[in-house]
Image (cartoon, rainbow, N blue to C red; front, side):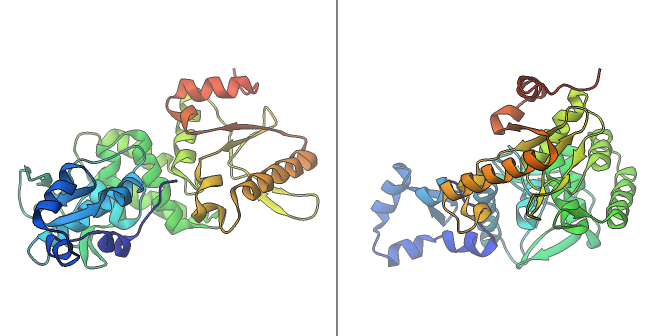
Length: 327
């Protein structure tokens, strides 16, 4: 199972040539390890063990590249932008694996690319620059707006949902006042921008909902909208037969069906399942579903990552459970 890392862990994974030499590797051996892809050269004089690199999610791999770019830059370092700012801020990059590190050239009108670092010549206010563990990047709101303008709808919505969740959601409850204020601020930001993709970005920001707990839930909601489902319940609450509280991903009232996105992490990622064994996590989920079925009389429809690659794939999956959008 792939893992997530934070900024400190990304720093620890990187080793310099001097580190490798001091640990007993000869210069010729270092070159051979890189050639055999047992050691990955992230940037000049920055390396990571290939196994550790391959075990990371895409966000973690890009975070390592961002940290390496910062370490190789002159102080105070670049201002990271777009997807590179997103990984510093802990936002998901749904199905996006950047090949380059993205930065902002302050005061420049035109961008350029050098040594796999894209330098964007975009206007940026000082208030939109924040410090994350000693690295500078665009603020949370500015980063969400930039992603909404430049990435796919699924990537953009997953990031927007995650940002809204951070500021307006506690447990499963989204504070309507804080959510409304976030939407207002983002709408004002989008209205002040005139660039390619901004019309779609305005729709994405308006559609964002912080109750999505995973990027797969965000993309599922986007596809459900495209398919034609209206009146969906998000995070519907059910009290079990013994007083347990459950929250489902989606509710389809017309069909009397709960919809659940089953990402692999629910059962395989220790950070999600906690200290439970995989089989215990599966058994707990079965008991939860049985309890919910018993007290509500509703059925369940479940889908996985492969079912949200396209709206048609999700539509076909739901139709197999007899769930169809309103006529």
